[in-house]
View (cartoon, rainbow, N blue to C red):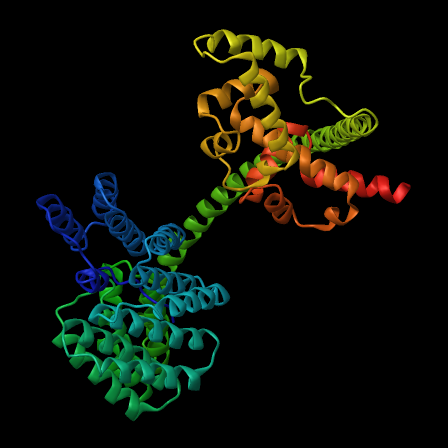
Length: 527
């Protein structure tokens, strides 16, 4: 027993799922969307779905378009393509956080996989549908989705040959449906569920229960205006035919089985056609109607011939696909080899790059240490600056030529700047140009002039250089500092952000603080 996709049912079910048709364009889109489910020709339905997708202006409209396409392929009994599009609906349902669509997509996926007798995959998707079902909107339509999940779960038990489990689960499904207000959808779902239960009762020879259940199914289906393109009536008549056969009501059995086969063949429902032909062959043998048996065998032979032709075609397609896969695999292998070589070269290059970087770090570290040792042996005069700084200073002097400052005043400000440095006032997190000017008892213009002329940098770089110089010396002379976190070191030298401190440290010293500390520890261990 397999699940049949129900396009018209899905159309009515989805009619009330959350919509936001506020503009005329939205209303036109929805009108075309709903109309597509009434299409008798599947190819036209597919074209409509494709056209709607191209016109989609929102994610919800895209989802609806994909639902049309997935349902159309299900009508064509093309499970692989139907699955592909239901998966897209599922993905977009997750992306847009629309649990109703996500639950519906996974329930339909579970149904499609069950058609292919892939029960493990079907169970996985049903589990995903249940998970999404925990966040259903609570609307009437979401309750229909939940009912469909219960039905699919019951049918999985049939696939597992768990008849008792199926009966319990399908009755749970029917009990849940009775809690939903009676309407076309409720009656349709109840009728479909009862058909499946009736078939199982026939198999179990519980004929009274089967008779009651089939007639309840017929009653509910007649109440509903929903008509599946698979026509549940074919399943109903086949069930009644088998029931009559068990009861030895042979004329009644023949009537129902022939009616079931006619409907199934008109609707090109191969599964019901095959099952009904087998039922008729059984009937003709019982009643010894060999002419009827010959006729039905001829029909079966013609159907089998078509099947064999299709199998040959399918085998040819499979061969071509396998050949294409083989060529593709060889192509992938060549690409894989090429990528592996590139990756190996990249890893080798990365290794040498890493070694080079470590070497650079060691050289830079030694350069800093040498400079620190030189400063200890011959304390550097803050007044002495590099030739580059002198060049900068000369340019600044030209720019500041308008400043009227005496030599005595300039010398006095330089001395105050030295005192500022000796007192390590630059470690204050709130230090600014005005506050430093206040410490030097001058204005910000004179301060900028003095810093640029005698330190060769602007105010910001001046503070940063002093702070980094301070922490470098502390790390070098005080081993305990090497165990501090970077954030604490940043705070010690006046930075509220450890990332800003690390960036400035790297910019000033051409080495990160963590690498500098690591080299200090390594040097200390060697010593």
